[in-house]
Amino acid sequence: MPKKNAVDGIKKSDAPLNGALKFFVGGCLAEIYLLMVRKYYVNGDVNQMLSWDAAMPALIGAGAAVLLLGAVLAAVWRKDTGWRRTLAWSVICVGAFFSVGNWLIRAVYPTAVTLLSVAVAAGTLLGVFWCLYARDCFFAMTILGTGLFASWVCRHGMSSVFWKMYVIGGAVVYLALLAGAALVGRRAECGDGTVGALRILPKGGDATVLFVSCGLSAAATVVSAFSAAAAYYAMWALGIVIFILAVFYTVKEL
Image (cartoon, rainbow, N blue to C red):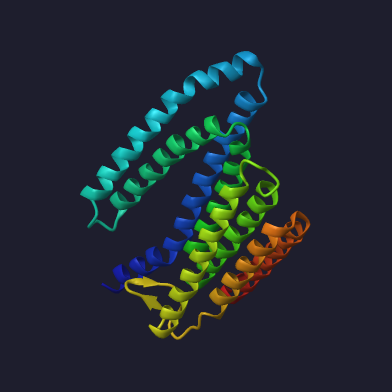
């Protein structure tokens, strides 16, 4: 019996590393696909571009079918906490990537390829943080990362007559979401780190890091909406804060 408990303990201790490895491998495969799209669909010759464009509807449809299959599996195995649940969500992610991703690539050609490459890299990094670090680190990184993206969108979209109103509307919605995130952080602080069944902060922790992340992201979004030059420096500032926060939590976990 003690030997079995020791083996179970080893498996549990390896679970975060295994989860981080799955996110890393999935992110690498997605980036490889996007590199192929960039090489043959964006920068290829005419025949390659036409071939990829003709295949896009089939890829979008296949992705949608895989997404639907994953949703069905997730509903059937909703009470399972083992490999079946992991498989179902993996199928959902693959289906969403091929259906939504290829649709965006075709609809917002060729800018969407760059945006998806950045989004996949950021999502992979956040997944690794989710598996290896405390939940407050993950949520803070998510808030700061979306703030950096919002600043980038404001910097490039506010100068466009067509996109300006959409960017302003998106910025307002994002600021409202940041306010909601701050309120959730406050509730978590008062509820010993949890909101319902979701643990956001460590037990006995405070929400200072979440408040600071929301404040910095909101400030960066507001200044980016008024000045492209300010948006450039705001993006650099958020990037530096993300790096410092990652180093801090890495040292903390050692």
